Amino acid sequence: MSHLLPLLQPISLNEMENYFDRLWPICRSISGNGLRESFSILQELIPLQLIEYPTGKEVFDWTIPKEWNITDAYIITPTGEKICDFKKNNLHIVNYSIPFEGEIEWSELQNHFFTIESQPEAIPYITSYYKETWGFCIDFHTLSRLPKEGKYQVVIKSQLAPGSVTVGHCVLPGETNEEILLSTYLCHPSMANNELSGPICMAYLYRQLAAMPHRKYTYRFVMAPETIGVIAYLSDYGFDMKTNVKAGYVLTCCGDEAPYVFKQSKNESGLLETATAHLLKHAGVAHSIIPFAVGGSDERQYCSPGFNLPVGSITRSMYHRYSQYHTSLDNKDFISFSAMCDTVQMYWNALQVLEKNCVPKCLVPFGEPRMGKRNLLPSSIEPNDKRRQDIDRMFHVISWADGHHDLIQIAEKRNESLFQFLPVLAKLIEEKLIEI
Image 1 (cartoon, rainbow, N blue to C red):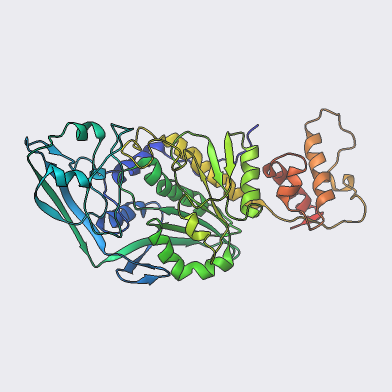
Image 2 (image 1 turned 180 degrees about the horizontal axis):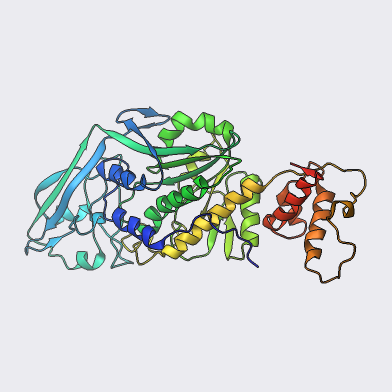
């Protein structure tokens, strides 16, 4: 049986799709105007403040690179055919290619092509952020029929110049300074599951959290170019986060209908792991749980030895585990907006487990409290009366409310969801039998 709380605000799938369609054609990278344009669109959903980290700035072991912008790129074959047209698909250009215009022979050009022979219809996604070179990505079908003689005209209208890397963040204050981190990346060009699903889901999750009348935790949202952006952000905020962050998630690969995968932080028995495993167990959905590993997204940075933050990830089709990953086949046809909405709801519930978890303490600890005089126990009750479950839960909470067991642990002792205990806990608090 599924035990999930509904979203506070309904999500319009048409609106979500509209934002996807606006973001899809933009050529994003770890810097540049495409990145800023994408931030500007997403700021309509989530009030991100932008930080610009200038070229040359040292951030731990890294240096902020030059800013990259591009307006056009293509190749004209010896027969006059236009191929690798950037304006038709921005994956055709190796991301961060230096400018180049000229005629070259096939023998030289072939060294600048990238393809996937095993996926002949796919255009691969290739980058060269820290080595100045140029190249084109091409599907194997097209590559295999190109003439091997004659001059090719190559045009890459790009610019590498001093600029900055842009990072977006915002904070929703709670009743305590203890933080939950929600992070995602914004840096890939036109890819759906591995790029746009994360920022879009996080933006809609922000809406849900902002609508909460009371938040126990403070929520920190980070949207940044993968790796370099988060490293830069950690250079400013990481040491405060090390003190305040109690749990966190990297939102990535949220967009399709595959079973959920929870990737743990390095602390495999921490609050993050316990709460997320508890949710997935009682959510009634197919899922798997895997340990932390360095292959992945920005959990690598948050979990690096100097910070070792409790940050994991809930994904659907996980990076490296689906054939469309980092190719043109990771497109709108691969994802589902209803699945993205479901992912938002799953994250919302994960955060509600964290919000509602507490350590109850019985205020009448010597012997069993007399429930009847508080109108918490009827004078008689049939064995199959539906009230029996809640009565049993009340006595169960009282029995384990010794100040050493949290609500997740107490619920698990009955193999039930924390959410099933919230109504009885509220009654016990109202009757001054329990404090939290």
